[in-house]
Length: 339
Ligand code: KG4
Ligand code: ZN
Image (cartoon, rainbow, N blue to C red):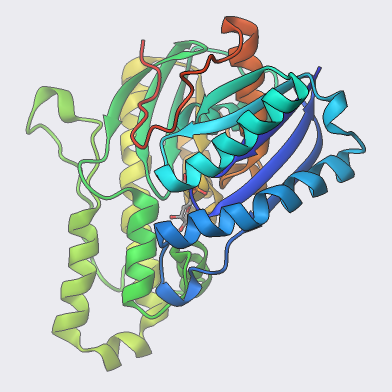
């Protein structure tokens, strides 16, 4: 069974060819650099760039996998959440392929695909598991007892954690995307140079114990720059970055540990772009060891947006529910399929 995955939800144009459940024959990810000078993704520019790159990306992925479209048994495409204009490029392209070559097509939820990135990399992972999805658009703590249906335990009330990295990087004059820039800059910096807040939202309501909030932490960095002056902050940028990273990561570890303690579920998945962060990986490893749970983190290239996870999820959805019908459409706020 050969599945072709297509991902265009944000600023990566990606196509992958997956054979069966785990043999990744090719994965091409093209990250748009058109946004660099704006310090963030500009939606209209992203859509236009996808139009230019989708066909060459597809052709390169097919070439690297040594297949043609005739060999494909299934097509999968991200239909949300994401930027509507970007999603529509991938969906239109996939629909065209599907109609011209009579191949079944499945629409994939991008958040479910991040979960499946861990399963693609570790085929023995099975429910029940907890998953922390941390990306530029989302921060979600999820419980899964059966593949395909998820219970959201907590989510961010405002900014996603990756978004906080991106905004703080921009504020400190570091290039987009902010996550890797801050991580690089923070190396060797002092984690306790600034005591930034770690918003835990503990106890305000009974059902918010797992919710997160990152806009306060971002504002704390803004205020710190205001009160200490740009020149001082530039001189201590390493320490400020490391201190910010410490707070951002600690909140995630604390929330995860609380869920692990309360849910008694032996497997924990850490996925999404921010899961590339070394400090987060280390602290989550320590948390998992303390609590005797298995921590599963995909390799870095499967953490950030990629079409391999889309192909793997399409296969699962196709096998459990068949192809999508003509109602397949872009959905900016598509929720995770809930239990
Ligand atoms: O999953 P992803 O590629 O896209 C979304 O679905 O949003 O995640 C992108 C996010 C960006 O905010 C980026 O700054 C962050 O992941 N990121 C990181 C690192 N690498 C990427 N954040 C912290 N540390 C990193 N090493
Ligand atoms: Zn993503």
